[in-house]
Length: 388
Image 1: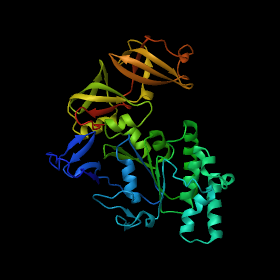
Image 2: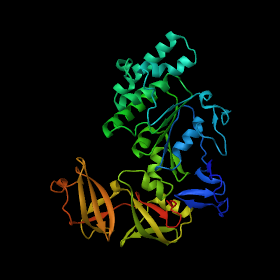
Image 3: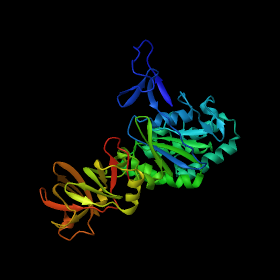
Image 4: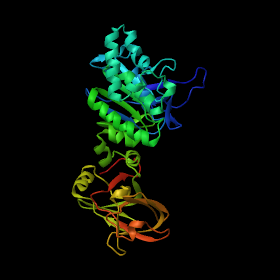
């Protein structure tokens, strides 16, 4: 847990310490602002963990607590069986790559990468071997004699990663290392990090607000919001089985569509109705609804854009919509439609569409769509928790 104390002399809040109050989405108690609350995870050796969430959710603070750059209010950080709460950052055997690269501007790339090893009084020939090996892995050998100002953003980031690699730490911490790069370079560097991970095979803890990075890099993803962990799981688990509405809406591009719906129950059988269309959840979802003792009434229905299908007018369980925007993406069309004043997005493969449709849709055109009971997600209206 991380609590930033209230400023000295500030009026004490009357809110109970246990309950606290919300201020700017973060919990404020008598002790101060709770930036990270009850963060608890076991990270296996050589695992790649990604902390992801919107700005201000506590992911960088968590990383800085692991690094020792931020004091821990409550709890323990254990690395390799050893509690490191009171051990200074330099003795924790970790390496951190920052968003801003943090290279020494007056040193060459070689000296930047060798600096930590020189402090350890390592023999010169060994330093040279390690620096050149790391430069080879990252394809920056030709830049070793340059200063950082003569490098592009992507090259500087590689130097920052190289400086971490030469130390051979137990844990790599990366704080949004790609967010300063343009889209094309970011994709390229993401692939480089995946390759790098296979070559050096150590434990990575990676912070990002980009869910594409989280999905492609992580063995497991930790999704955070307002200082609380929302869900921990593999990329496939959080995509297929989001724990709540926040996770469902955060993971996946374009984001999941949400409908106001009604859950109906007859005996042990459930159906869900939205905009006059009634869908029967698949058997596994029926079983989960039963196990959760779901009660009939108002619920939120979630369907991913890629799981929506167009159908002919008058088809059973179909919903009528009018086209707002048709975005041609090459292999697919992102269709923004309006259903009774609500925006519904669908992703349609151009391969599956008739030739005239594959060119796009006109504004105001009427379409009908449906979706199967195997792809729906049902959430509690009040708590937002997944019932399926």
